[in-house]
Each structure stands twice: as C-alpha cells, then as structure tokens.
Length: 227
Image 1 (tube, rainbow, N blue to C red):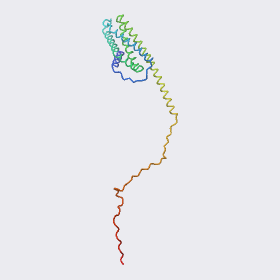
Image 2: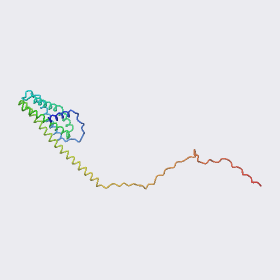
Image 3: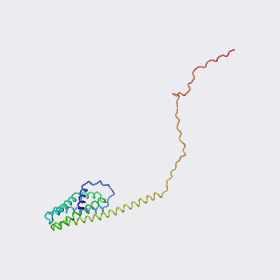
Image 4: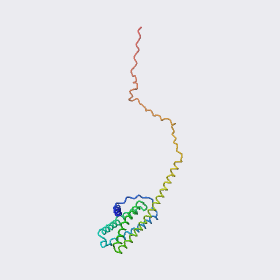
C-alpha cells in the first residue's frame, strides 16, 4: 500500500511542469550515450508493459472479489504512471543528463513502479494464466534491468560530483593561502601640497554705499581778521 501511495505521488509530480533548467558546461559524449541507452531500454519496457496489461483477464482469476479489486487498482496505477509520470521525468532528465536530482527522481519512480508492478506479476502467477504471467514477468525483468542501470549511473554521477567539489575546495584553499602570503599594500598620502587659495571677488564702484562721496563745492573765502 505504501508503494502504491508513492506511485500515485510520482504520477502527480510528473504531471506538474518541469522547472526551468540552468545551462551548464557541455556533457561528455560517453555520459549522454549511456543515458540514451538506459532511457531507450526503459521506454521499450514501458511500451511492452502498456501493451500486456490490457490483456489481463482479472475477472477470471481464481481469487475473491477483494483480491481482484486490489489487482485491478494496481494495474490502473501502473498504467497511469507509465503514461503520465514516467514520460515527464524522462523528458526532464534528457534536458539535464547529469542532473543528480532528476536522476534520483527517475530512480525513485522506478523503485515505486517496480514494487506495484511486481505485485501484479505475482498475482498473475498465482491466479492468472501461464501466458499472462510469462509476458508480465518479461516486462518486469526489463524494468528491473533499467532500474539497476540507473542506480549504477546515479552512483557514478555522485562520485564524479564529489570529485569536482574536492578539486574546487583545493583550488579555493590554494587561492586563499596565496593571498595571505602576499605583503599588505602600503598607501602613501601626500599631505605636503599647500592649501588652495580662495580667489577674492572683485568689487566695482557702482552700487557701493561705503565709498566716500567726492566734495564738489568751491572752497569759501577766508574771513579777514580785525585791525
């Protein structure tokens, strides 16, 4: 039941729009080639499973009504995941081939899908026909190979990213050590320059009330002294 709930959650997550991808450095050809091979294998398993599931005759299985309803619910859950969630996640991973989060998202979806689909195959082997069981078992084995392949890829990507982080830390530490070993720069301030003189404003005679008024009157005659 827990796997079925997780599978339903994966369907809902796959239906949502994928977040915008950030452009990064070019991905090595070998990594892209490995991813394309794994995705091709997974898509073939998905198509085969979607073709074989509708052929089940659960109503004829030798099990009670509750068992038939549970098997039918599991079949419908697997079909929804293969038709909706899985294609969305595959597209997201193709857009970011070495994105660890997208890789783990696909692996987690495959893990939940494998549990629910495995229950269907087990029920088909116990209550269905031999042909039903054989077809579904082949599909389950193909899905399991794809799941193991993505687990190995995820482990390799994690190791590679950890190596990149270690190299970046070493480069940062070396840069910090080089910066610390350099002597501090001296800043010389030249304060011997004389202060600049403020230019005086020139004044004109016009409109200056403090300027003396010139005397234009003629001098008076001297008064004669008495005899």
